[in-house]
Length: 269
Image (cartoon, rainbow, N blue to C red; front, side, top):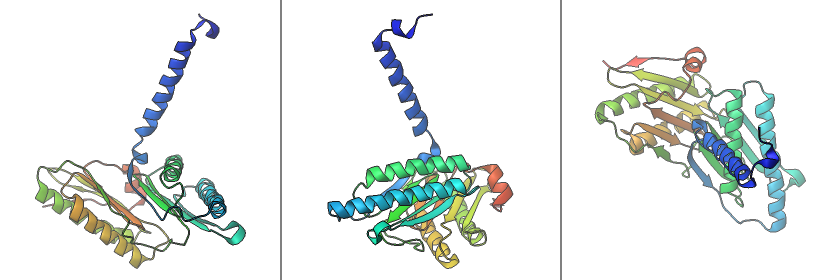
């Protein structure tokens, strides 16, 4: 067997490049890390000294989120606030989909944190929706906020072959999920079975919202999906305090939805 020293340097470098590319491709293929929307608040508001203090608080707030996710068994939600020096505070919140494992939630948060830092390097606030989690930070508290004009949608490009029936099924399911979520700590998932094509959907509010604000948020997310996405095969409604998705693809865990999330089955007659 040839020793490492006898292998030309060129091939060693090429092997390292290929290994690195493989790792990147695997990470990019993770469906929970798929980005569906982001936004940055006001930029370049700080002098150098104030910006440095803000970044220190941001780093501390993000570290606290990670610690809270790691230390709480099965936790998929955390908030934090850092105000070192009593100037330039940072409030932060992370929410993972409940169908994720603890490791998947942690990995999604890692991606969200790095991505939002890249997108909003000098902003006093930022938010990002990935398919698996949501992360937001601001210089003022937003934990009870449900609606924000800065949020929108992500819609697939392909239309259903039977748009009227598909839209009807999706709307019935989304409406039912809003009702179920209000009785289940702001979270509900479920499929609607039909002879032609099934629909799968999820509704989730952040736990810091009141029941009334959660319902209002999900109703607005449903309106977004109705106005902008249906009858496309897949759509996400993005809001400040909630997330709603429907799809022809079963994107959540069957085991999780059946055992702990009031799984239900509806059929169109």
